[in-house]
Amino acid sequence: MNSSFESLIEQYPLPIAEQLRHWAARYASRIAVVDAKGSLTYSALDARVDELAAGLSSLGLRSGEHVIVQLPNDNAFVTLLFALLRLGVIPVLAMPPNGRWISTHWLSWRNPSLTLFTGKTTQSWPDRWRTNTPACVMFWSLERP
Image 1 (cartoon, helix red, strand yellow):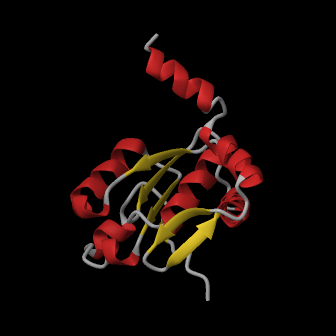
Image 2 (cartoon, helix red, strand yellow):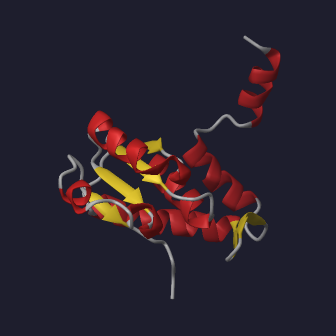
């Protein structure tokens, strides 16, 4: 095994979803993520991840299912990614600039349990794509009032 890889395993021995709990306990008040709208501490991120994971679980998401995620790199994306991983859900990550071809191709390819996009991503989708996909398409935002 590569020695630099082994050192990473020693440094981060936990699965990433569990690692966040460790970081939240150790660095509670430190800034974990920052985007144009603000920042979250490790403890706030961990709490939001728990809240979102519970909500996604109540929608029926289960470990091993696929969810397509096409969101920009911001605090909501980080929160969602950790929530999915905490549930054991397999995120299929799609970059928003890749456009609707990638989105619709992946919808049929992965047969996801849920698909999460921003409203901007789907505004230009023809109605037939919104209604004739093999997935439950959910327009989602983590924005808080």
